[in-house]
Structures are given as C-alpha cells and as structure tokens.
View 1 (cartoon, rainbow, N blue to C red):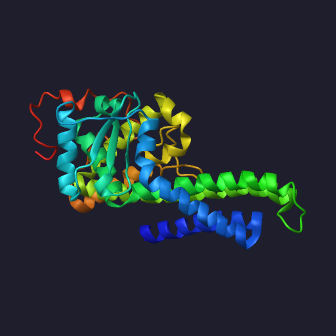
View 2: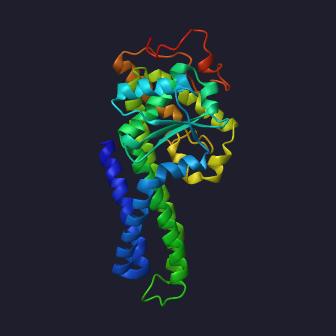
Length: 314
C-alpha cells in the first residue's frame, strides 16, 4: 500500500508539472515541461549525492578516522543485505542524519557530530538502520526526484506569471490565472512532496527496526533527536530548506504534529508504530522512551565503559 500511495503521489506531481506547462503553452508547453523534467532528473540522477553532501560540508570517514562508526554501518549493511555505503560526517551540533545516492551501489550515509555525541550506540544503530532502509527501498533517488520536480514546478509557475501577463487571455492563462498558478502550483507540489516523504518515513522506520532487530532503539533516538531539533539550530538546513525532508527528523523546526505542511510524520505517531512493531517482534520495550525526555541525553556512545564494541546485538 505504501508503494502504491507513493506511485500515485509521484504521478500526481508529474501531472501537476505538465499541467502548469499546458497552462503556459498548451500541448506543446506540456511536452516542453516533460522534457525539462526528464533533463533535470537525468542531471540529478548522476549528481544529487555530491550536491547535497556538499551543501552540508560532509567529509568521508573510514576505519582509520572513525572505526566504531564505520564498523557499525558495515555490520548493519551486512544485516540489510546491502553493499557497504560511503560514510560521511557533518560538523553540526544538531543530532541528525540522512542517506543519499542514486542506488544501493552508490549510496552514502551522513551523520552529524551531534548525533555521535548525544546518542547511545544502540540508538545510533537504530538511526543508521533507518537510513539504510531508505537506501534499500530506493527512497534516496525518489526523494531527490520529487524535490527536483517540485522545484521545477515553482520555476515554471514563476515563468507563467511573467508569460501570462504579456499574452491575451484567449491564448494564455491571463494575469489572474497566472497569479493563481504562481501561488497554487508550488503549493500543490509542496503538499505532494511532503506526502511522499511522510509515507516513506513510516516504511523506513519499519524496515530499519527490523534490520536492527530492536524497534525501541530507533524510537528512543527519534525522541532525542526531535528534542534537540527544537533547541539546536541547523544553519545549513535553514539555508537549504528543500533538503529538510531527507533528514530522519525535520532539521528546521522539529514539528511535533502530523499536519498538512509537515515534512515528517509526528514523532509520537512514529514511536507508537514502533512500539506496536516491538510487540509483534517480541522485542523488549524501552521504558526511557517518552515525549518528555529531556535534551541533552547521556554521553557519547563511542565513550561507553562497556569495553570494545561487539556490535549492538551482543
């Protein structure tokens, strides 16, 4: 059902894009819009990962520079049946993470230094598993395509405003129609983009929890990250709000409710779904997970006194 909803929403986004082109230039305008979308997505397909990682100043790490982090990613990738992705670190105080790449063979997982400092090893494992679930579900490419089409719709709508103001109402959308198109078309694209994002977040939570085997590790991490998002600004995300949907928790404002304009589902709803999954899997619930958990949480997972890391499953 999730895949069907995603396909329908993506089809609606494409139809909206072509509709804006049609209002501007009729049938030929719709075809031109389709060609523009194809060309833009072709460029994005090959370059999206480098573009977004560059926006956040992410630098690649390896087993020499970050042995525990890279080892954890490798262990989880093996459990997920995925090739080893690139692992990158962002010098950012807000705990957060995202995955990118056009396919599992060219994937990258990026985490912030704040995430490394604030989460336990088990919670970090839940976050990494969630991001690997996006990779396994090919969400990284899907979300980039939706962001690209949504941006192109906004560009076309602005062009339509200029174009409509210089054409006769019988041949173009007219000035009133152009103003409405300039407002409604980007709004519609944004809503579809957000709907796709929220659909895929639930799917990634479910698969990620199954990969790591402990749904409540991810639930605990989500609560902590959301609490930090309210208090610690992510200035790179503020400069690039179109990428907010890529993060595990909205880095802009950390919305706490499921509403029409939220890029992510409610954390409360996500935790509830993970609790239900934990019951189905027979996994223990984590009593520390709750909406009132304070930030900052306990110390860095990498400084645990439990000795050398054996993997988060014992």
